[in-house]
Image (tube, rainbow, N blue to C red; front, side, top):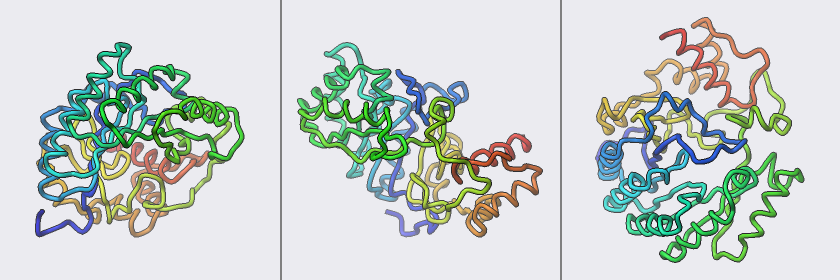
Length: 319
């Protein structure tokens, strides 16, 4: 581990968006990206090199591969986790929809390779949205293959609408689906709440919270975020871009050494980050106003949606 640690960025976790391609199109999906702007999948050698360098320098606690559906490219996923195991990253996770192939033999082969590569947690998305697209029997067979290979940490991860307790038709179907898998020796996670983004904005608008002109909250309080001056993880996109938050890129690992990107990260040298850290969402709005960008007059569902929208509008002007 390095003697000098960047006080603004300590990569305790590495995430890889292996691909944004998917063999499903769930009506709530918030991982929808402009696929034409990304390569089909991350470069395997770049991903492995990133794991090796970050693993050796910073001893992160966990690594995750996700998508899209990461198991569309099982060899890349296995290579990433094999390197993570070799450099001693203890928690090695995959998020998947569980549909790996129609061929049972191929599913067993993938499960075997994942086990040998050191994956020690498989998180399977199971709910009404995924099962509108993917037969539950296929998911069951995938889980059974993983159990046969000796995986002991398999979680079913449902997406709830509004909350798990909310008695709507989607949650009712999700609970029914989960009941059908109760005979399997796997755990059910708390799951997550449907986010007001992606396809949910089109297909499930009636279940979204009201918009606000200036949503409450700050970075670090929102799901899957850290304060920008105390980042604990990085995410590598399929094109090599390195994010410290949603669409907040600090460089590209293809162009700049990953360790250099981590060491040189200073949010106070990035004007928009500095404004957000010091003045919150008001700072973001003032920064955007100086660039000639105004927020959406209809408001936003969350500070994350507002932040992403405003930064994208500014970037279009600056291009």
